[in-house]
Length: 576
Image (cartoon, rainbow, N blue to C red; front, side, top):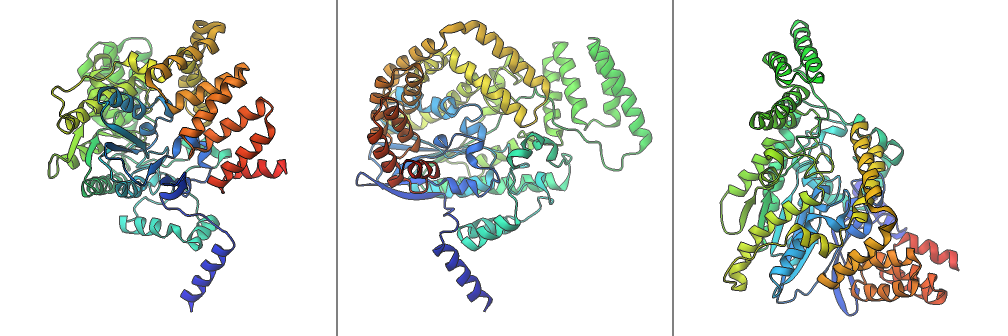
């Protein structure tokens, strides 16, 4: 009887149109072809705020032809925001640079690069995404993940102890397609991301645990099993799998929080605090050598306090003792009680998984090592990252180049190339992507409110504000013209790039050249019909030139392809 009642309730909910499919991929037909399209509801089920509030939905999805071309080489990128490229901008992420490099150096191959990464999510979610991608005839999986294991879905940061078994987690996710389960989640369960009005308190709301806690050990073990499963999905599908160590800003970003051992005697704590205060006072006066002496005395009592290790590292940096600085700065990251960065043990898990049953199918790409190699004095900092884990253009380029070097080795035999080609230079990538000073300025402007929204420390926000002022002075009143010329050059070098075309068209609309924008928008829709944003661009351009009837017709075309597009439905009803 209970099963029958639940079944009846499920039927009622489906008939009433309640809920959504939560499968990773859904099928869409267009122009007589079938495509596998990413279902945003797959990601949305893990978030309480709309997924569009943390990223541009146009960047989230991709459409894969059901019939794979004979010369196609399909690459899937798996991870979270650092792999996705948002923050600050997907269009300039390492996946986009890698695609440019591969197409420029191996023109005989049709590269299809699909980025399945999503901000705020982790290996529990990516495991299911990888299982879906494995059905699409992949040639290569690129796995760059680990920053959200603690704070993402099923992590201990949001309540509970994060000690659920993998069996329980995967069962919970597997039943997500049922509308009854979706109803129960909406009624009684809160996903991990905070609601919009609470986001400024985001960091304050996360629970803390020491590096040696059972919660952290459990997170690491579950990460190990998920990474192993993702590797296995790729290999079983006949794809190569590149597992990447994960880099982070250890030089210019303080630990989020620090904790002493539980039950530590008050007498020891008092002595520790006295040494720490003395060291801090000396450091603030610029007496770095003396500060280190005081900090070392504190470390003899408790060296696991993350801020202490960070201060020792920064003092050694000032003293130009860079090897010692790197050692202590990495310890500061590893001891962080709010681990928003992949630590040393996690990177070891990635390396161990790549080394397990080594073969031509699976390899390790030491991204952390590459970032360090190209950073000042071998210590990763603001020369590679915007914040604690998200790449600036140089950091993204360093990742793309490292991946290219490894993938080129795989492709040389396939393409019968005699010599392994070199990657594009960073300046070449900037030109081909249209990365100009006005684009950089927009990134900085976008990051300032984002940092404030998530409650990031004022010192980092003030640094961005200073950079914004410097860029505004450099660019002056020529921003729109510089940006336009950048897009023109990008399209001349890279052909029909969706992001260069669509941003160029938007810029033309802003500058009042609606006729040119309309012609470009028509081309974009013809080439990318399964991107809702391309249809919206065409609708806006049609309205700007006064073609209202054609704009309404395009709106209906959008709804034919995407019946659940709520914004399009609302506008259609308003027109009626």
